[in-house]
Length: 231
Image (tube, rainbow, N blue to C red):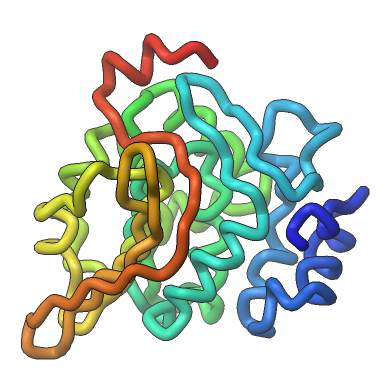
C-alpha cells in the first residue's frame, strides 16, 4: 500500500498517506505537513516518493510511511514540552517533525539528534535552517550532535521518547537507561531479520520490550564502517 502514497508535492504525499490509512493522527498530519521533505534529500526529483533515499555514508532517509509509523508509535509520549532523542538523525527530517510535535506552542519541548558523521550533522543543520527552523536551533529547542548513537546523548536526557533510525543487533543498554519514567523507545533490532520493538519504561522504572513488526533498515554501525560504506 505504501507505494501508492508517492506524490508530486509534499502536500500530495501527506494527503495520500492519510487516504491510505497510514496517517491517522491529525497531530502527525499537521506536523509532517510543516516539514518539506525536499529540504532533506539530495535528489529533489525523488523527494516526494514514498521510498527511502540514500544520503551518503551508508545512511538513508527512511520512507515517509516509515517515519509516519514511527511517530505514530511514539505519539503518546510526544506531548508539548517533551524531550526526544533521534538516534541516527541523518538529514534532520524526523528531527523537524518531532520538533513540531513537542514544541508546537514554542514553550519548552526539545529534540536532540545524534549522528555519527560530522558531514551529515552539518548538512542536517543546513536543512533545518532551510526549512524555517533557524530560531529553534538558536534557542536550542533543536540540537544535533556528532557521536555514537548507540551510546545516546546522556547529558540531554532523560528522554520521554527515543527514536532509533537504524537497526541495532541488540537493544543498547545506554539508550534504555536514558529513557524517562515513563518513556518509550522505537527501535529496529536484528541483523539478517529485523523487527521493530517498543521499549517501554513505566513510572517505577520497570522496562518491558514488545516486538511490533518486521522491517528492513540500514545497520547501526561503527564510524569507520559507515565512512567506508559503498553508498
